[in-house]
Length: 240
Length: 119
Image (cartoon, rainbow over all chains, first blue to last red; front, side, top):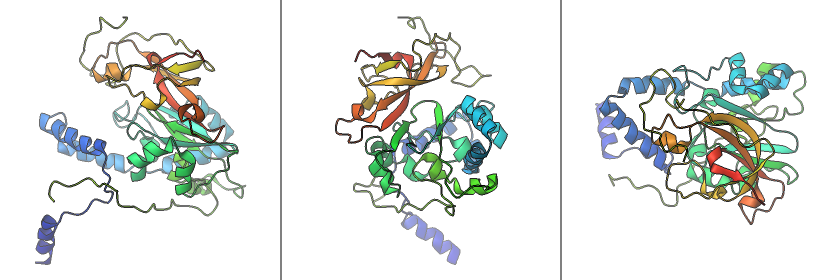
């Protein structure tokens, strides 16, 4: 049977990981999860349900926030006063799913406003803190040690690798998100979007624009796919 | 030391596990203050990066009071909660060879990780 043969084949040659630079934290997460299930803190079914809920969150919430902040000065003022509360206006409740957040997404959000002379970019050098209620899961490169260790020290060079070259007169401000506060970049509204609706504006505020590695512009509705390069010293599988 | 009597307690069931049950200490710093990240021994889980130790910056935001990462790591939920601050550093102060004068970096610290800057 064709199906059976494919199944056997998978056992002989396990699929190669998409990113061969797995972090210690990813290994740790699996170990802690398995221990917690064994100890009965939660079941595998609980974990599956939570993972599916978390994976259903898309960056669209952040896009709506940016578009509304560009078009509604009253909303921008409320974002400045308390961004976590203002999120409810765009349908995002940071207290979900427990009533006090999701144990690693705390109830603190600060929106970093770019200006023509100030550009923000976000990282977490200690792990991979990310505003998940707004943007969903982080992209793989955001969690990679490569991005995390280099963006704080060589931000202009790393941004150039994403295709974003900024002149020296624009201040680059790296936000190392190391505690319980989460951050999102509010880019400058690009020229050529006058009279656009909120829905039209939201389409060009992609995930990368809200992390700060890209700028929104008319016609750009999706992030570029970053090519994956082989790690110089890949993690070796025990099965080899 | 103010937290010497603090004992390990169980996570309170009805609140967020990290919410804490102790007192909230008043904030010592205000926006605009120059502060230095203390050069504490890297023994405990602190979430204070090595690359900012001993470097001075400016307080730009008072965020929220909370437990320190060290207390949280040891389940000391009745330890005093401290003010958290966002501190802005000049990149040139963090990395000697950094070539751009105006670039900055921000990160967040509990009060006990900071001391008044003298430089």
